[in-house]
Amino acid sequence: GGKATTFSETQKIVIATRKNDRYVALLSSLGPDAILPGIAPLLAELKKRGIKAGLASASLNAPRILASLNLLDAFDFCADASRITHPKPHPEIFLAACTGLGVVPEECIGVEDAQAGIDAINACGMLSIGIGASLNNAGLLLSSTEELTWPRIAGLLDYTDKATAVNR
View 1 (tube, rainbow, N blue to C red):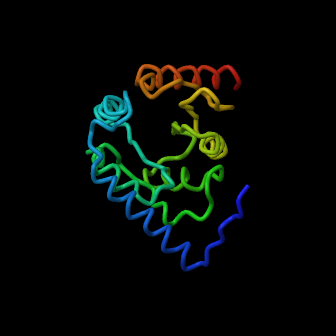
View 2 (tube, rainbow, N blue to C red):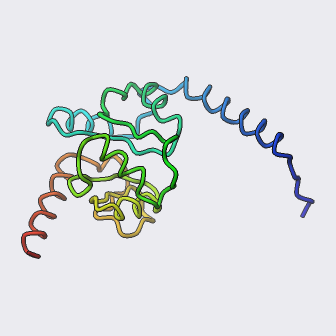
View 3 (cartoon, rainbow, N blue to C red):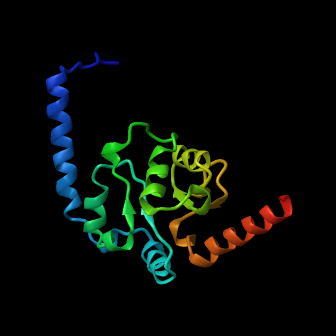
């Protein structure tokens, strides 16, 4: 074990800025071929059905990424990560997306690939869909975005409505 390197606050800022500049440069090379499988057809189907889609990403670069992927028009609202004060698993960013879309969380479905995101979705009363095998407490767990289809989402909604009716 070698000795740990310590950096001054100024050095940390310089390193973080350099890292972010490289990341932003890489974003410019993104194109529609970088979209995860199944996402573009799902967003097109939602748009066709008049179902609003919002983005609740903690990344300050989210709008730039959507633009690079030609997906900016597929979303009706993108939560402003710079205005979020509590990170996931706090539900703040999902609640901000709901507010921006003009909907209540109980009428929404959140899709996440991280446990903190699933916890945040559940905390605000949305239905949760998890992408990945190691997630707990998702309303629906899928192994990949390829499985994220409108019939599957509609089936989850139908199941939930029936479950709610039975529990009344």
